Length: 450
Image (cartoon, rainbow, N blue to C red; front, side):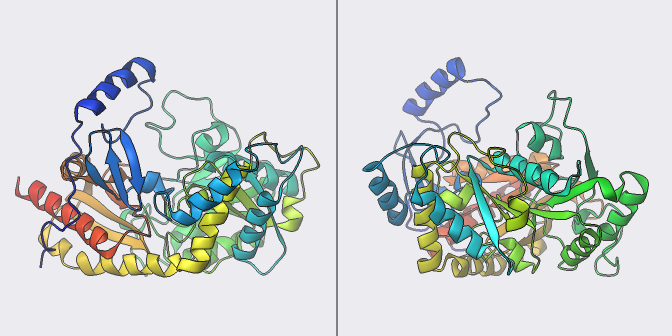
């Protein structure tokens, strides 16, 4: 049965009002066109899972600042930590005069990252910067130059991170040349298997192809690390079969190749546990996180085996604003929420609610080719034809536009721009989650009927 219609949340359309229209005109004059926007409205204030724009429209947020707000907008615990920090100092640079907040964040990450071994953590400003530093550390420790990444991966927009990223448009179009010594192989995208096989009879051939890569394209003795997202983010929320991880890890361990888990989007309870690596039961040598780590302030982290993280010499790693005191204070507030409010359980609850609500959607909507995900990290892949699996980017765009008009902030993903992804704040109420799903259902119905 369809979800019940309108709830009591009282959302308003995300069509730009007069104040947003005036700000849009200023944006066109002052900001490069390359910095695109999803919704043409300007934010006035936020709370929990609700955004209010400058014209008084209330929007339900299923994007979470592109995965930065697992703890929600402006949670009291985070605000209190930030406010307390502003009474002390804003910046000194940890490399000049260090401070305790940095240590608290590093200690918490060292304790919660998977693996029963000593760990150390470096703090930086963003996910892309964290990825680049993870590669630096891996190369320093192994003395090897080459890195292996995967098709459909996204690791950031800075030079090395962009080189690791797979998708050409818009992320790499016109920005070459790219960093050398990066080699790529297909990810475990079962719905669109690169080898035209079917799980589980495939025998995880996509993971075993790593052996072939060493024979045909790059000497394994020159490979420093393999980097992957436990679940693809921008690539369409693709979750590999559980056997994929131990196969990749075993192949790498035998050759002294490090495992780097990019958990920028999967981290901080999005898949259930604090880190998806724990969900899939593997221990990365280096774990990268950012986004929801700090509740909306810029912060990234590289957590790894102590001996690996200590490979670069003094002064070889750093940055003026890395581990900024305010960002650290915010992260400590988020960590308090994770420990005390059981956000891991809430992610699992959202996942079960998604499965319950969508259990008959494939029967009702031929557009839906695949429903997938883990915990609260869920996706709907849309196709024009289920047999050919031809992507449906135009229909996806129309569904998003319909949802936006009904007051739901929603994002697409995927190499073919045909995946609807959910990044709902974990603090969203049951009513808010159901209302957002009802809007998606109505949008699917409208596009299906038309």
